Length: 479
Image 1 (cartoon, rainbow, N blue to C red):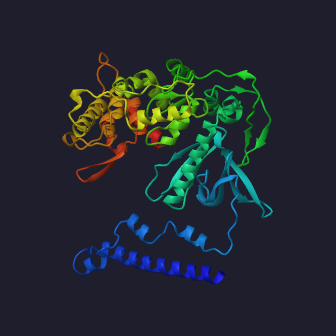
Image 2: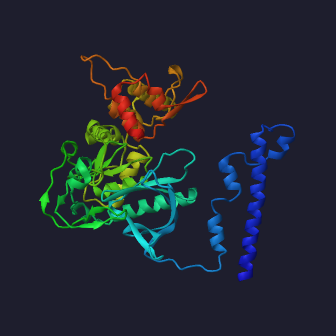
Image 3: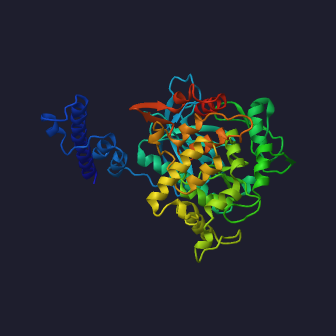
């Protein structure tokens, strides 16, 4: 058996050497511009893109192949969902090594990693409780691929990098499944947990984020955190009611029931849809993926000012007038109630947001799908140019492409049209610059475009063209 595994490893290594050599020849030919003549015979029927070369060399499945041929295979712990190597970005900007490699573990209750202790032994460092965490895919430079961030209200954010696309998907999807499982199991006791407020240590900004959580608090002892500083312990005792901040209060008052099932007092938000939903529906939304719904907690997550403005500008009533406007045309469908099964809610939410099955299409929208999309793209651009956030939300709900470029207006996208929109006089209707830009970004708008063959970033394009208000907003997003 050992000999067979050894032979298998040698075969794998040999195949990778051959593929790597071929890839090197192709890369050199492309670099020299040898795409015709003798160079054409070299690269004919060969992969010429980075993704294709990586697939040809089996680069990302190499760890799995090596593991399958390993002599010793450790039995998997049933309590562990996922474990493996990840790179962790240092919090300290002046750290000698900005990235360090650690063995991370995800179990049913939380995430932690192993690091070497003072005596050479391995120590567990807790990252977060899974119920309190949020995972976000990172938009980073192309040199840093497969990165994601983990946020938690009682710990600092962690930026992590996986070793390849499959490893990346495995971690992000597993974390989301664990979060959804906690939510769907009705484990909402964490909402009643109190968060310690230490204004002396955290300062006004952090204290504000905890105050906005609206949780009950009790003065508690301190413990040493992973970075050596003192942090507060989460208490489960209900003591003093901490008032919500003004933005959260307005959002909750405006949306007293869940947008999808009517459950009272929803406390979860879908940022890119601009609606409030209950904890059970939020689990379904998470399962759809962030390209459909970006779920955050109003009480556990710290939202930005722009995100608060976005939720205040749309809300459940307006959003449902679009997403459910054509429900009367769909026979056999009725909106679920809070007492209905999770399956019923899941079918409704998928039909509503994923398939856009309840949107009312008018004759003026077009005769077929192509005509409709063409009209909605134009509607999105025109609404973005005037910073009409509700019209933007309607166009996006009906299927407009957020990155559609207007050839008649300098190949700009809706986001570029929004940030360079000129302010009207005081007597005109107020434009919602920030809210509109935030909605477009939440729905995946790219921050760079090609103009006359030259790539320009949103910030570069905005300089000299955008208002001071928008420039300050863009700078805050970049920082």
